[in-house]
Length: 105
Image (cartoon, rainbow, N blue to C red; front, side):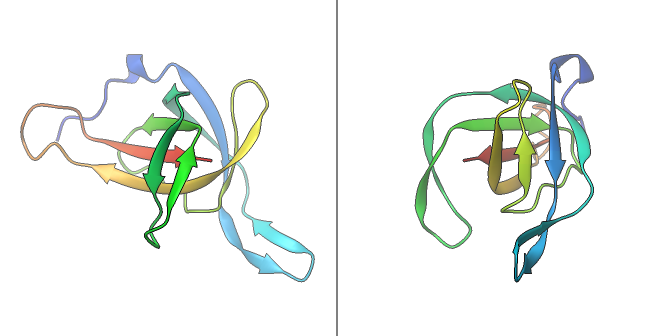
C-alpha cells in the first residue's frame, strides 16, 4: 500500500465527528486536526442515500482518516461546513497513492 505522500498534505482542517442528534441539535465529538490536500472546487456528488448534492470542496487525506457524514469541518480560512461523505480510495496495486476522499458541502 502506497499512501499519499505527506508533502502533498499541505492544508489542515479540523473535523468534529458527528455523534447524533439531541433535543437541542446535532452532537459532535472532540475536534481532530487532519492534514490534507484541499481542493476547493464546486462539483456534484452523490450522497450515501443516492441523492445528488453540490460539494464545495474535497479534502484528500491519509488512509485511515475518518470523517463520518454530517461531521462539522472547519477549513483553513475559518469557514465551517459539513461532510457529505468520506470514501477510501485504494489503488488496487496500480501505483497511485491510497487516500481518503472527504466530500464537503
